[in-house]
Length: 267
Image: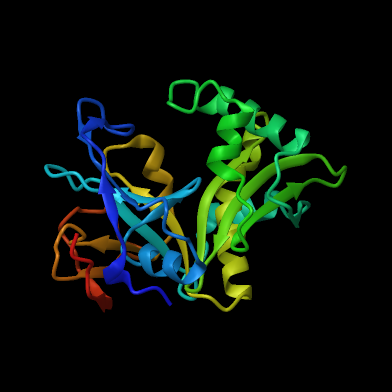
């Protein structure tokens, strides 16, 4: 197991934030020369790190803490009525694990999704090089799960990393014409059940940002746990705050159950 105190991290210069207009962001990266094993990845995920391509990163903004890591404790999750309808709509789909490779079929779905859903973002226009560097990695913890209908038509791909403590929902892309199926939400529901089947604890959803509309869907899954006090050097807490019946999410207004405490990295 890697001694986390020996890891090196690098911070970027401030740059325009991808999520909040008019904000400047700073990103902290694990040294790209550091060999990445699943144990190191899992421990850093507990501290709010996320994978993009070859890099593990987390926000490190001096004047902003809007990006809050979120995860779903799968043992406690129960679908609400809307989520039950989504599960019913998609019960005809079959899911299989595929090699994390840029097949023509998978890339075609990806580029159609980006063009339809994210033409206003920094992932547009899509390219094979971008797809390769962002998602396709020959690591033993990286998985591609394909979602197909009864005619074997590819409708969605969920890119996930299987860690020691759960799975990380890295990215999901789907057929933009199948909007009635709510495939993005269904993929998360499937990953929750898959994590249960693996007898693991959590699905890691990445960052939730209160004022970013595209992040709103993450708080539909309850209970959800948020990593709080992540800027502090004394420690980090995963706190459960959103449960069924809670009317709103109030940042800083935790009625929180303390779930985990661990020492932070002095960075």
